[in-house]
Each structure stands twice: as C-alpha cells, then as structure tokens.
Image: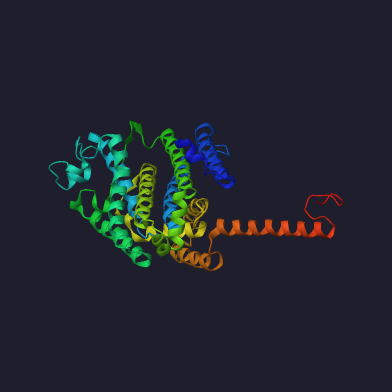
Length: 392
C-alpha cells in the first residue's frame, strides 16, 4: 500500500528528477571507488563529500518548500531542526570515540573532561546506540516542531509574525548551545569523529556509502512530499495557502493540517542534518544562526517555490555558487551577491527557475496548439490532424 501511495503521485518531471538522483547516487561513488586518480572521470573524495553536503541541503530545501510553497507557512527558523538532527547524530559519533580521545576517557567526550564534568549528563544516555540516535534524529526536531506549532497555529499566528517567531526560536537555541555548561561542546561544538557503525568515518568507502544514503534520503523525501501535495491533503494545504479564512469557514481544522505538515517538515530537516554531520565532520552552534535559515528560504525562492524539484535544484545551484565565489577575490562580497540574487529573482523570476520554465513551456505548447488549429482551419479542416475532406 505504501509503495503505491508514493509512486502514484509521480509525473514525468518527478520521474526524471528521481532518475537523475539515482544516476548520481550510482555513478559518483563508482567513479570515486573504481577509477584511478589519474582518470579525468574520477570524482575525488573531497568532491563527493561536497556533493553529499549539497544533497543534504536539497532535503532541507524540500522540507521548507513543503510548508512554504504548498501551505503558505514561511519559516525563518528551519535551520534549528536541521541543527538538532545534526547534534543528535553528532552525539552518537562522539560516544563512539571512547578512549581514543585526547584525554582517553572511555565515557566522557574530550570537551567534558576539559570542562571538569564528573559524569555524563543524563540527556547523553542512549546515544552510544545507533538506533536510539536515529530515533532522536526524528523525535527531537519533530517534538519541538509539534510543541511550537501547537502553540502558534492554535493562537492563529500567521504571516510575518510567525516568521519572526520562528527566527526568534532558532536564535534562542543558538544562544543556548553556545553555553559551555549546556553540555554540547559550547562554541566548538562536536567534532573529531572516528567511527560510524564501526566503520571509519574518514574512509573512502564510508564516504561513498554516506553519499549513497544521502541520495536515497533525497529521493524518499521527494516521494513523501509528492505523495502529500498530490493527495486530498495537499489540496487542503493549497486551499489554506490561498484562502485560509475561507478554508476555515468551510469546516476544516486548519491548525491540525498546519501542525501535521510543519512537524513532518521538521523531521525531514532533522534527517538532512543527521546525514550532513558525518560528511562535514563537525556540528556547532553556528548551524542555528538565523542567517542559515534565511539562506535556505532563498534556495527555495531561486529554484521555484511550490515545485519541489525547483527547491532541490535551487539548493544545489546556490550552494555550488557559494563554494565557487567564496574561495576567490569575491569572497568578501558573497552575502551581497546572495542578497542581489534574491532581489533579482523576486523581481524578474517570481516563480523561480523551474516555475518560470514550466510557465514558458506551457505557454509554448498552447501557442503551438493554437497555431496548429489556425492552420487546420485555413485548410478547411475542423480538427487538427484530419485531412481535407475527412472533417467531421
């Protein structure tokens, strides 16, 4: 039943997107593992890790597009859910270091020994088990989103007020995680990871597997989003986006729909953060910075709000541009370029790259159909495709 629900929502563009993700997930790791370093087609390990980071950002962009593009909830704090998922995975990776740390303590991470912790804090219990950490990757962001959404949506907080509150939430978490006595490494965060499920996290094969898992997670996130937006639930979400008051008047419990999709989106962001951490090798409070959440919204706007494929494309394109332009003479001006990009897209391409292309293609097809009908009428044929004398 579940595979049917996921696959029935696929159209031509969605199928092409999934095929591209599958091809990338197969050929990039194979190129890295099988081809010699001298081959021009070999993808270096550092590039594979970089592309893996882009894939995690694409999942985060999908989670934002689900609530913003289809339900009208503009969250400027979704980076908080991403960071919480990353911290949950980082805590597991820290527990796997054991006595191989600088201080050789088999239980306490190095930063706790340095800060004179006498025992492991209670909220670190269980993170020595992968299944528990994987559960927390979903549960912690999901629970925060549920509590926040329950309070906000039942109070009918909407629009710019909701956006400001989400930004305040992530900033509050930023300040909390910066504290050394909070138990998460303070300003330095969590790093110096060794193993994941017994495999060296720095090994070439492990990085290839993490890249493949990122592709699988992106494909599953896309399928889940497509299943939601093409279902009856998705039609209600679009109605809430376009006319919330009218939808409420028709008898729908708007706050319940918003709460469900907001919590689902937070869980997706948490998974993205969990895959991000072992590939990047660090998680620190900087991930909670409000600027990161705003930047993620820009990815969605550039790619195309309400298109899903555009959100993922925007995340990859903008972050690739960021990698290129922040490593040269233009590095000090990157934020100005990003702001200019957002303004230009808003003014010139309000539907983003994918949305604009879709509109152009639809208009092109309508024009071709009209030209064909006009030509058929001039030839004395009432319907295009019929020869003269065979018109009905």
